[in-house]
Image (tube, rainbow, N blue to C red; front, side):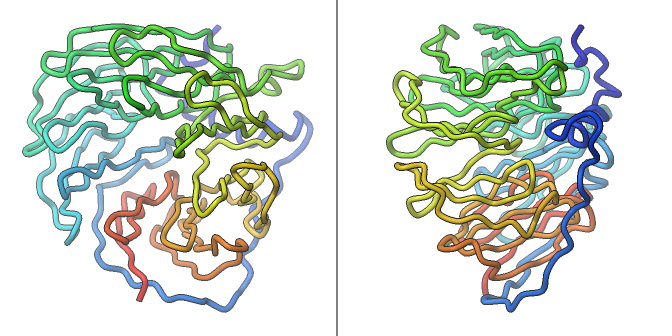
Length: 383
């Protein structure tokens, strides 16, 4: 039986899983670490602030804004879609689709794609928000759509990758993986490399399929389910598979961080680690926010641990994002922590949101764009 069947109440499962998995059914997840004082090394200033309505509320969804054509496109769960100017933060337009939205905004400066809780893929004009077409895909989508030429590509929570015609929404191809009975709330976000779509699956594998026809290029398992219960056997590969110049990096829940050959998916190295978010790369390191709340730097070639910041334990961290010489990571209380890429030490801290930050900040024109689950959106710079 698939737990994904009850879409309207399933968000609560993510919270339950976060508390139970990784500890054992009789253990209680430790409370988030209290923040320790430190001497700031840099000062941040807010450039602008805006709001996307009521935000995500209690729905535990991870909406990532889209940056395209000098605009920021975002949405809220209740159905509103917004466009904002990236330089000033001023509103450009907003519409209300009057139905719950999940999965974030995908597309480009001409056309946007959003997905509804009931499983519709909706195309919007990026300059006005006007609805152009919609297509039922009969499954929930928890990641932004991706574009390849004239094809819109979506990944559903039931293990499907599908391509749709950009102009009319007609189906073009479909790929399905085998999915476990229980999965985390969310999916990996596909990336497109040349004509390949690469993404992680809930069964612990990373796949590469043709963006033209959905044919499988390769599949590589980076985590094997262990344990007796479905909770113990969760091995989702969520977040975004990381592409560097010569390799792919993927991390799984209760599994491994693995470096994969770009062309055939074969593992070049792996090490045990658990994460629900995407790795990122800077200097010569790979950075990971672990399930336990550590931020860890690994040498991307040798896999050796370079440093570990453990003062943010159980603060439900976002993926780290590289910002110049620093890393930025959000947490469950609306804080963004700025760390040194060299040794992981704290250099600054801000609280741009009143509630948790579910998605990693985004860097645009040397500014840090932060979205909070309370609907706040703000841009920050270094003084």
